[in-house]
Length: 253
Image 1 (cartoon, rainbow, N blue to C red):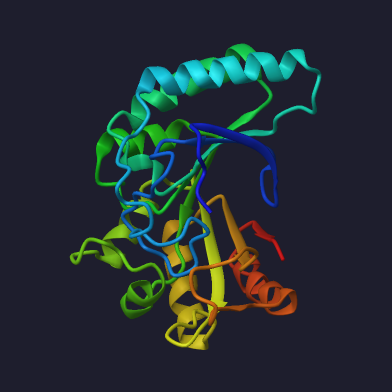
Image 2 (cartoon, helix red, strand yellow):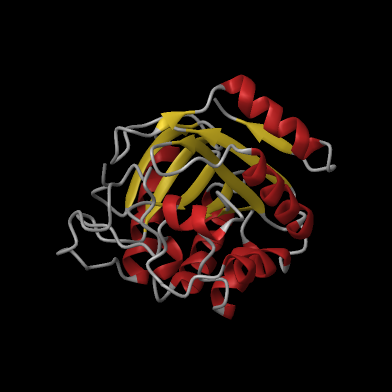
């Protein structure tokens, strides 16, 4: 499922409440530095002919116009302005400037709303991206595994030089100012619920020391019908091990 506009929703998010989406990628294509087997937007090969991303000015204008009309209509309050959409939002060349614009618009029109970013964290080497993510309320970063072979099987990074240890080191640089989001699943070629997987992941969480860990499993249609959902009891058991480390944990079925 692709999002066919720059501003979409709001939708009810399992983790963020009433969430207004911001898509910094093409309206009819996907651009991402990962090609996750479970991505609700499909695979990177889907709709790749569309490479047009919205200009900074369009994002700010569309967001301000939507919020002004939404507030005037008396609809339920927006809990989060959420950067997600058709791929990896931090790939936009003006991501940092757009975040500054969004915070200013939020402060002016919907000051109670949070600014959230869902990212695979692979752009953290870019200082402007790192600094921009440090400014948002919900800096939500993906870590589905701490084992290289599993990252290759589940997230399928486009860059062949992807280094999970380097990524973990950059996540730790946020010094408690990030939320780690992990999707647990099983499939024919992947399973990040084994004891080896959980232990490696817990070790990574110790190093990162995030302010929260969000745990969930499959909820929408995926590109592969062999992937399997992990039940709430198992997710809660994993969460208990995270909580034993002193980390706040949120489980979504």
